[in-house]
Image (cartoon, rainbow over all chains, first blue to last red; front, top):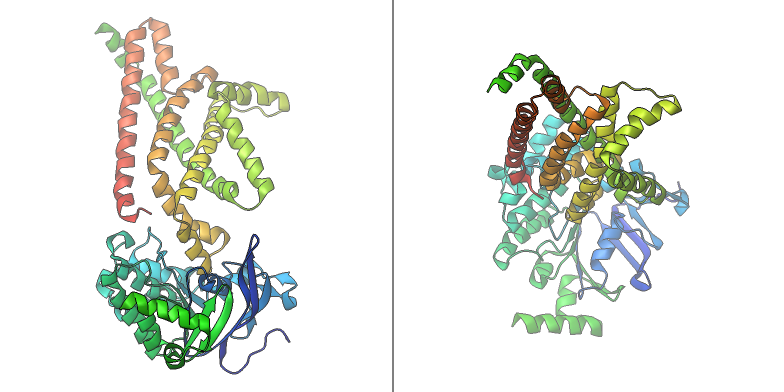
Length: 262
Length: 218
């Protein structure tokens, strides 16, 4: 079992991930370790590879090189990377990683409650009654318990994204990945989603968040990872990063954001 | 009016034809949608050899006149040692022919769905049949609903061709009455009105699905 190393409370171990699309290298030898209870914010200009990195973690994209371990179990491949994981194992691995999408990606034919219940019942084969009780609690947590019978088409963007978060939490994931969770929202609706994520951070739900909300990243994250052109350029605490960015690229990036905000 | 009284006197034959037509369209409708749903993921799937095979079948059906296809199944297959009753041959022809159309229009619906539906299904651990059954089928059917409605009407009209192999459907029975008593106008008009009524009923059924679909539209 030399490939499945469990190092204390490491939830996510990303080692030297590279990814090319055609000739363009999108991720360049990216490494990142996430401990249990951490909230990591991935920052960086558009097209820097943040979203691709998240998509590699749950194998929606297959990295060309490197390895990813989720709570010590190697993702996507078996036997030290020689054999592709079978569908069954990959499915069980994915079920341990919660994903929240920029475009919400709710299932339009299912009610809010059924969206939340579907994967625990059919992928994790858990008891329907228990799942239903938990789903209602999660909907209460995101403030949507009264909307449980509605269909996604009837909800606002902010409500859809809160359902998206409840749906991901219903799997009891080891880590929650959020891919620009507020980028598709009207400015008026951003706050309600961010405050849900903030409360998860306080409960120490392990999260990796791709975001362009700098103020939010500053408040919520335990660590900030700054990426540019497929490289991890800087990893720091939010205080360090926002007041004394170490690299020139990060300084430029932050200046541009300050420019936009004032 | 006298002509219509003759038809009334043979209402049992009309009824036989009506029932057979209804059974044929329900059977062919349900089977072609189910088989179409099975073929669609193969058409859009990553297995190129399988996709090409299914595509060949779909293209062949779309280019062959239905009448010729019926002849092939009923008169041609016995040459290969497969002799079917006219009813079985007719039903088989309707199912095989329309499955191709259903697969093609469901493929279109699949490609029009937001990719995020499939992607979120994958990332929540759904694969294979589970992904198809729980995530894709309903949005696909909802998206394809108007086209499925049209195709069902096409099945109804195609079913009239089955008179050439003596399937006792509506056209066949009323043609029988008209040739016995030489009352073509009354007989064919009766058939036409009955087809029209079936058509209206089908549209009502599709309309009730539309109410289901409107809330769940992808």
